[in-house]
Length: 270
Image (cartoon, rainbow, N blue to C red):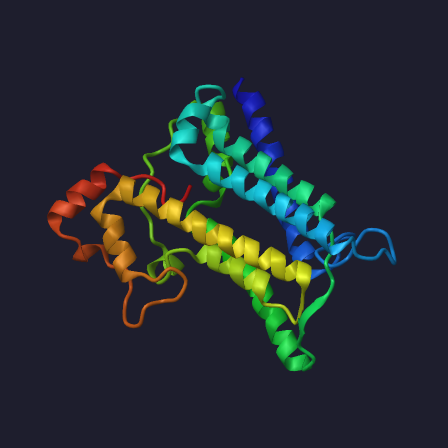
């Protein structure tokens, strides 16, 4: 059974990785056959605005609901009564990837121009910022354990019969200055563009709204898990922008808070 779960986890990760690579091309309108502003059929025009708006909003909403519901601790506790706990994260990753694939396939381009930056230097700078956002996303996942975040560590542990070490609250590198570098990376990737179409703007607004709502739920869960330790962290560290002269210093937590926090340690991200 452990070997089956391992193969399942590897397959889920491979699909996820390919989906993320496609997402990068989808947002940037490069390499991939169908993107945020380019339909598959050469010369195909935009769908009627109302149709495109409704379909695209539903696709974005489906991803947001799937991702948010399955990330909640209460759902995880219920879900692991049905599937093997080692496969829970891989299943989450797989279903999120399938929701994105559906979005890519069914997306209706809305190519009306909102803004166009004609200066080549400014346009190149915006493109560089967008790709820098993707780099920030990937680097940040490795800082907090990329392979555990996307389910591979769990399935390998199941195969080898090892127990994963107790999770700990970590604030490596970027996390000492901003609380959500992964989400910041996505915001940079989605908003920094020299050509903003109506469809791209809809995508950016919807994903930004989802990110802000997701942060509210995530931080509520983290406060429940970590108590005053996370409250202290949130006071010291900005959400997306470093607070002047501040960085997280666990040594400033009162001894009583350290005891409470050590008893509640859990992963920093769901």
